[in-house]
Image (cartoon, rainbow, N blue to C red; front, top):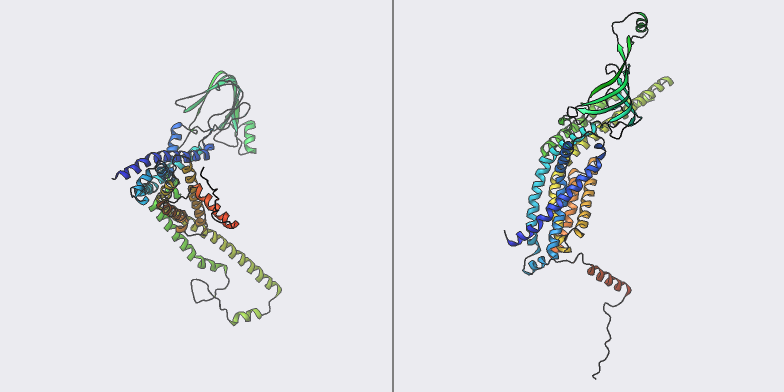
Length: 507
């Protein structure tokens, strides 16, 4: 390895690692802000939250690599130009293309790693992340009992307290309704009233204990064997009625233990999330795309045979599969010339209208089915193509960043960050628009997935040519002189005005 290559790579690794960490953090914060409502007031452990953020960090690496490479290459060659190291290299007869070769080789290797990461690790991380996120969403909120409001998130219980003490666990004026889990119609079967009580958990937060003081327990006891008197009459009048007795118990100290098994995060089956394109690698995406396309072609082929049931007459055509032209002949004209009664004419018109409406509904439903299948197939194919295009975008953005850094000759996080954001937003907008047009069927999958790379490649080739010719593309003086030249041409003044020099006489 030449000393020049070592110089470039040594200047590259520091900014690259820093910018990659910053970009991943920014993307991770975007995810956190988007899903922040799913974490608030949920009984989710720090381990689950850390695991979720770890999965999302892995899934954002392929998206962060292009922006990190663009910013790092800009800073690398900007620093080399700012400290006149590029000037010294060029004065030694070394071309700008030779100076950028080590960066291109490194970008090619990172692009290969990005593709492998995007094809193998990112689908796995997306599957883990979104399945865990779904479980967190489905988790019940933590216990937050408010004064004067019934709390109903505990299965089978409704709890109200008149006042909560500052410690958050001691409560005054407690009312607890217990519902019968075996019968929805019976409603509340037990009511507990207590002057005070306290709340705490046991067995590693597996059970919640309400320790109540000085109260009464009102309970309905079902007596399934009683058939006499008023209970028998009630059973005959209403079959759903069940004989019961009522009991009241007074207590000075009573403990109500409730299981918290319904709280916290319960892991669901990850196989239910594998249908999404984000969870598949290239081979799985190709298989899914081919399967959807076969279904699309099969449904399209069966349209004509299925539509025969909506027609009263079938005309023989040259093509036995699709109806091209109908040649009814003179016999139809003779049928139309026959006299028809008003009632029969009305019946014919109503039958025709009904058949037309049925055919319109058939066409509309099948059109929706075909569009949905076409959209699904394009989605799988687009995701497969984007795995390649996203990896190649690393190399293309270096093709933009390296010559731009050599042209502007500015390092740091100032101008390079601004330029990187502009080109990354351009790439993001083109990707979004291409994806939209592909899913709507207005653009081919290949064009939609490679649209941003094609546009950015033109910028990269242009900037590389400017850097090779030592262009002053971003120098303010160049544009000031150009504007002044245009202004002089418009006003008709000469390019140079003669300067009168006064005579100098010897003293």
